[in-house]
Length: 199
Image (cartoon, rainbow, N blue to C red; front, side):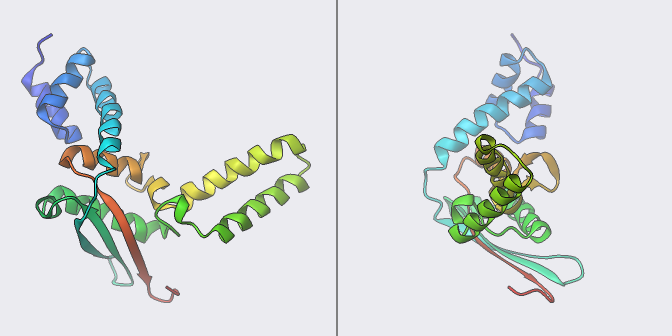
């Protein structure tokens, strides 16, 4: 099937994916724009996963100061080349992630980084809550697991819902930019400063 060049351009503007990827997505989805976006997202995750094994040795330290100068974030974000580190796309993702950190104050980048003592304490609280509410023993573990997953989604940066788009989390956002820029992107560390709060 032949695809209208305007549609290809529109899809590219909308998603940031390459022209050939956009054309293929429209062919695969019979010209349906929403299905083409879904197709790109699905294939993009696969591409992003392949790239995530590559070393992100370049990057930048990005600083974000929130309006009013009472809240700030320093973010260490990596990519593979100095060239990509200087692109607008890379700076945009650094800005969006810094805003996310400012707004949500995550305790870790990923769930594996959370202090095991804190995880155990949360588990213990959820277990006692379920037990005291009279839930049967056989479903308590499932309840605890569900609440713990919710705790990680709320408090671990990569699992948090993106503040500008509730349809995606921060890892989805990073996967999209990995596909667009063609390089692995990694959040290495961050520090959030707020007037009157302990660091």
